[in-house]
Length: 406
Image 1 (cartoon, helix red, strand yellow):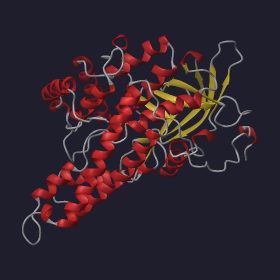
Image 2 (spheres, rainbow, N blue to C red; image 1 turned 90 degrees about the vertical axis):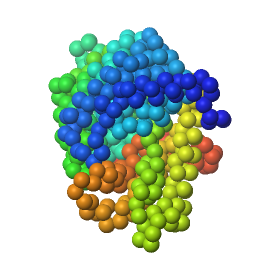
Image 3 (tube, one colour; image 1 turned 180 degrees about the vertical axis):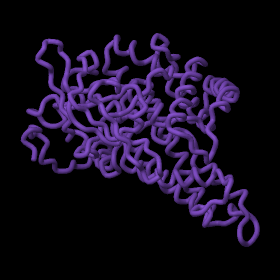
């Protein structure tokens, strides 16, 4: 694969760079400055609205759905250029555009696509992910939240259960929800996928205080929550296939396109060394930064290849897990390297230092990525079995009805 821009892509890059230079600075977050989550959410919506009005939202979606019908390669080009700015983007926006919309576009019907795609691209609808549970994290198919049809002839469903690690659930409009609708079949086969209005009676979110001091994660309790059958995405029992579409989008989007190494290169080049010169003159520092940059570039190119596969209608399958696995490891390593370069200032930064607080946050948050979107161990198993063709692990629950599992 040639990673150099084609003439068409080069022209598109110039167009994107010009538009972003005129519009992105007004939406940028200040380095090292913490703002309330409500303000960050509002600014995230505003940036999504700006993208939509400028014609830069949902680039690969059809024009009929509010997008531009462009290729995956052009979407990658725009993401690279957008990543040059510190914009209010994260789970608050990416769960909608990178997880909810792909599953609705692939498994939903025309009415659902008309209802949810364009409003999400505009920032009018934001989304959270209601997947993990206290007893179903890495083994998502072990989830116990249950949905049963009502007996009043409406076709509606009543949902009871608990979800956890629901990013931004306390501020988002809608959630993508997977539940168990049949316990008489093996655990992967009895699941069904819904979208749910987070203002529905019976939904309660409780923030989880994190080590960073933030509370972007939540516990979400669902008690006799009534969901219309019109909110079901795909067929009854097709929930696992829908989940795989969501997770592929999440894993392909890991790392976005903002470099984590380039700021460290700039810092090392500007910081005097103890024995003259700068930190970048130190061979050991150069070696570590060079290795980190090579890994980052390699992952970026591999990610671009898989996105191109998706744009052609191909399914990367377990290959998408390689992107997430590599990113999680690199994110933690680069954050640790940044802390080492900062030295004692990484522990007690001076007043006015805006660089270190962001670095500290990345260092703390990097541990999350070893679990979120698929734990390292799970992804390694998937890659070994589905990419390398190695024997699968012994699974005692493979063909056992869920209701018989202990």
